[in-house]
Amino acid sequence: MKLHDFGLWFKTYDTWVWSTTIPQERDYLIYYDGNPLSRQYPSFDLVVNRLHPHTLKLNENFKVIEGWCFIGRCLTMDDFEIIANPDYKGTV
Image (cartoon, rainbow, N blue to C red; front, top):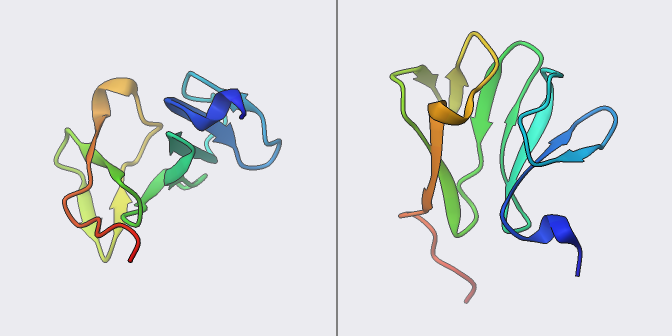
């Protein structure tokens, strides 16, 4: 069992460094309970993964087009919350 399998973790995309705080680099992945929830790209666009038991709920009215959220800046912890994914069906 790895420490980053539980709770909220961030992993930089280029250097693969794990952190419990949002990285200063603009390209990183967001994990919760070992599952990838999202990625914020260098362009500040955010893609939210909806295939796991939890997902991100954005607290701002960011522009969303076909699953891409246009943030325009680095996320802060106040921009989102982790919620149970209402679309998650689990394994069959």
